[in-house]
Structures are given as C-alpha cells and as structure tokens.
Length: 570
Image (tube, rainbow, N blue to C red):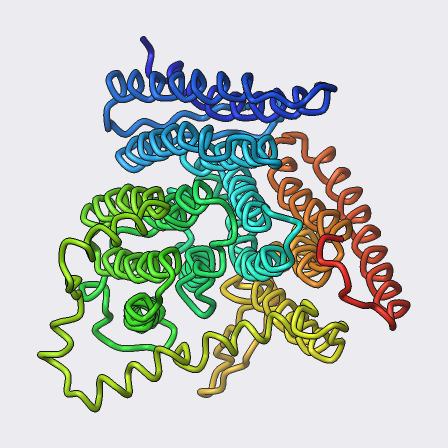
C-alpha cells in the first residue's frame, strides 16, 4: 500500500469520524421523543473505539516511525492545504491519544449511566477527540489553531458540565479567561508564520531567517497557559466536572498536548547549555529559555508542596500533575527530547489511572487503616534534610497558597464580575487598556522589526566628507497584508474583551479565525490581479466588521450601567 494514500486516508478518518459521531449523538438526542436511550451511544463509543484502535495498529505496522510528509491540497473540499508530517512524535501521540480516548470512553458509559447530561458529555467528548486529531495529525498552521481552540472549548464546557451549580460555571469562566489570554499569544504566532509564508509548523526554525527568534517566546507562553504552569495554576480549579473528564482532560491529554506542540515546533539546536552565546546579548533567545526553565522550577517547587498539604484526592493529583509537567518542559528546554516523550506518555497514562481509581480510594485507605494503624508517609526526606523551623515556615506558605495563587485569581474574578454581585467596571477598564496597549505595541513591532524597511547609506563626496542618505525600501510594504495582520490580532483581543457576552464572544472569535484563514486562502490565488482585488475587498470587509463590533461592544458597555451578575447560567 502506498504510504501517502494511507496517511491521506488516516487524516480524513480521524477528522471526519468524530464529526459524524457528534452529529449522530445529537440527532438521536433531539429526535427521540421517548425517554432518551443510551443504547446507540454505547454502540457508537464501543465500536468506534475499536475501529480507531484498529486504524492505529494498521498505521503503526505499515508506516512505523519513518518520517514522511504528505500535503493534501484540498482537504475535505475546504481549499486549505492539510499537511501531515508523519514521524516518531505523530505516531506515538496518535497511539497514546487513541488508546486513552477509547478506554475512558468505555469507562464513562457505565460511570455516567442514567446521568441527566449523558448525551451532552459524549457530544463534548467527541469534539475533544476531533481537536486531538487536528493537533496530532495536522502540521498546517490554520488547522492546528482550529484544533487548539476546539480543545479549549470542550475543556471549558466540561468544567462547567453541571450547569445547575454556580461553582462549576464560575471555574469554567475562569479557565476560559486563562485559555483566551494564552490563545492571544498562539494566534499571534500563527499569524506571524502565515505572514512569512510558513505553512508547516515543523519548519518554524525558518523564522530565524527573518530575524524573529523572539517569536518562540509566544509559543512558550501559550503552552504555559494551556498546561497551567504559570502564572495561573488552574488545574485544581478544573476538577468540577465528572471523573472521566478529569482523567482524560486534565490528567492526560488536554494538559499534555502543548508538550506535543513544543516537541514538534521547537528547533533542535535551541537547547541549553549548548545554545548559550559566547558573547551575551539581551536579545538572544537563550535568555527566554533560561527564564522559562526558572519559571518551571519555581512552579514545580510550589505545586509539589501544595499537593502534599491538600486533603482532597483530586486536588492532590492536580497539583502533582503540574509538578511533572514543569519537569517535562525543563527536559525539552535542556534538549532531552526522547526522555521528554517517554516521560509525557508514561505520566499521562499513570495520571489517568489515578483519576479513574479516585472513587475507590476511600475504600482503599479505610482498608489500609484497618490493617495498619500508621499510614506510610511520603515526606520523610523533608524531615531529614530541612530544619523544623524552616519546615513550619514552608507549611504556612503552602496553607496560604504561597500568597500569589489566590490573589492572581482575584484579578480574574474582578474582571469577570465573579467576586462581587455587580460587575466591576474599573477592573474591566484597566484590563482593556492594558490589553489594547499590548496590541498596539505588538502591531508596531511586527511592522517595523527586522523588515529592512529602510537603509542608511554613507556616500564619500571627497575631501574626507561623507553624506548620509536615508533610503526607504517601498517594495517591502504590503498594505493589505499589514492591515490583515493588525485586524487578525485585533479580533482576538476583542473576543477577550467580550468574554462575558457569549454571542459577541463567539462572533469575534469566528472573525479572528476568518482573518487567519484569509491569509492562507489568499495564498491559493495564483493570478496577481485577482489576488490584489480579493485582498482589497477582504481588508475593507474586515475593517468594516471590526469597526462595527468595536462600536457595538462600546454601546453595550455604555448601556449596561446596572448590569448584575445574578445568573451564571445565562
């Protein structure tokens, strides 16, 4: 069998099959006028999981781990190219995600039996499986960002799974805030890659040719926000959903997928200490890597102590997950890529098992206490290494969440209006001004930095005199691309501002995805005149939509003086 045909088939299967599952579950749910049955869902999950595993086994037997790149020009008749880079990371993560999704899906069938939100859970579950297929198989920047957003959307909706309780809805909005804040960085990186005509994320090292090594900082920040490393350690607050969602999302796949992204996109020569420059400069990327390692060490130190003092089983495991994720990031930054791959897969499997056995932990510990009066302690090494006074001080810090964890979430609560009964406009205004300033500065830097927009030449006119000439390189200006770049980032920031208005939030998010896809779609037009015409029409349309959304957002804010946070379900 031709390898390219098999990879093309796998790409269509793992993208289209989850979509069909979502449609089948929702059609069955809304068309069944009798008591909603679970029989079809069980068949879909069981036979669908077996089919997924068979496809993965066939792919591993035929393709193995040999590096192969396939470019599907018209994927699902959409028009955007779908690039599949089959390699060791793709094969391992495809097997890892498929096996865990199948096991947790089978476990959820009986764990959520007769639950009121049974069909809702599996709809979100298959949307999550779709996002995994996009993230694992696709190396195209556009499809990668789609998978990233679907991963965040399904995660947030599963945190707020029990919508009749206010606490899960509050935590869902908090996590959505953190996700969106991190998505701004990844979206900026995606637009920057499209701007330099880099469609394959595995070719991200080419960004060094444009003098934009600093863009890797955007990837680091986006991964840290998605994995809950820093500054908001949000995983313990995501434990509001059912146990299967905690196991599959926050124990294994959702928090571990940014590591796959980093393993695939990170340039192999960027590893400390070999990458450290002989002559130190403040703009060298090694400084950002060293800072990221320091953040991971600090996060691991904080979370390992937080996990030891918590009495709740899920929160203990959640803090322990953050500790191990920080260690895995350190392994990547130090160049131990194979070790990081083994670590992330083994850790994901182990944490999934831990979450699945949490319902039986009480029975287990009661049995242990009956057999032995003294339970084994895991902190004996602290007693032998640290003095008692320092241990007490460290314990007091841990009880108070090191002072900054709760305060960092207070900022989110003030912005979202979750801390008090009324909406805090002053806090929202401060956040909006700060984000707007960052957006403007980012747009200016993207426009000017390393673009060779001007040259300064010195001409000798004799007698030792020179004349300085300031020459502008007009051929480097592309007005339409610059405007699309600014509007794309602007839509993403506007969606962040409208995070509390569900309809406006999804409209602005759709516009941001539209603008990113527009850059990709314009590259498919070969005729120069037609491309210029469509660029002008697209820029004018996007600008009108952006101005309209800004005015409408300002109008809503001005007329909601008496806005109350009475109902979180709304």
